[in-house]
Length: 631
Image (cartoon, rainbow, N blue to C red; front, top):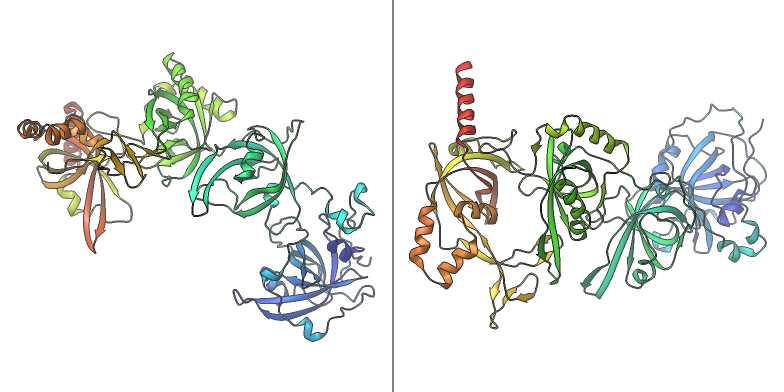
């Protein structure tokens, strides 16, 4: 049977068909030069449906089709992905993907040749700024690797019929056709070359309204995440007046039909979804609630990681984790940068990977979910907790914290939760877990700690690689510098963390933070201890910050600051410092080489201080002795 080209395909493409995958013939191919941006060659085709012919540009990623001979004059091709644009008053199709159906064939039909002269034909395509927005985009598909049929084989491929507008929009001319409802497409098929589109998806997360100030003035923004029936996810962001239109409309768990937004590259610093694009809604955008529940769209999508994987995750990575809550600490009030008070609460999570992690809840998570979890654990029931989009922190080991887009699910009803519940109730509760957040074993730390003596730090070149080294040493406090043992710190919150920058007194007897540009009556006092430690192999200088400093000094920094600088009781201050010398501790150190003014210095920071448990330490030394005798 002879090959049949798609009837009226050229006309359908020009009128904005969104469904057609036309079968066309290539009548001519010309090399028209190189693009100005990257110096890549561009090919221009003359394509025909047997009745009409029109020029088309070949996307540069398809150049190999021409160079390898897979596409040549006379080839029958099926366009699977393309756009159609106005270029200087002419309609031009840009082919993004296609399949070769018949490599070579005689000319089919009697298409009229283009009225353009050969000189005009060879002019380079105008730059992107001269191309009007496209009228349609074909479906996004993977690059085809199917081989073309042998020459001379006639086939009749399955081709969709020519475009027909919905009945209510027929016979109304091109303007009314452009007002036809946009076709619903999968989120994964969205790209910025499309004209009209619509997506149907469920809201899985909604952020709070955030205020900002930049060179353009004050503004507000909020965002929400969508999930469709194909598992595609994307974030939508609204600014200023658009916030007022849609913030109260959007509800987590509801399904919406959304159209007329603009696609922009996703800001990966703030967007953890697996999509290279995000949608910005505008004044012309539409958001319609779908009243009927759509069971084909899942309520949430998880990609759970074992807690053991969190230990290897990069700082600030966004992960989904699930585990059993084994302890919950009380909520603590925290003052934010804007002067508003929030709360912080920590809990411990363990799973069947043999690891446990500390989770920090912020703000409403503290009061709403945190209180419920605290009551459950307090009544000796240990709930399963699933965390969607938790943020990894590498301070003092690894921990996970909530952010605005985080979601918590207590005792959820899905297989992963049921599996954990069964494991915990049948022996997992009594199974020892190693914490990746801090060392919990008395005197000796966690099982995976690295024990060193002071001299090994220099001998083994610790801290001189790209990443810091974490070691534990048993050492004695030999000397403490007292000229600048602490500093006055800003108590305000920036996001989820306290500012902690140094503050100074003002003429009005207030404290001023240059970073936050705010004044306040009270400040924090934070340790910045320079301590000399020693063991039987040598001595070293280490820095101890707030928590570690309190462990070493045995009292808050504010008490010593008042004694030294306000009461000016130097004698009592000196007695306190002397009494803290020659105590032996288990010190976990973070060791990293840093550069100051082209000079390399080894910085050792105390991240945890434990008193020595001599029972555990004796067992450790005995194991070393036994091991050395067996060598």
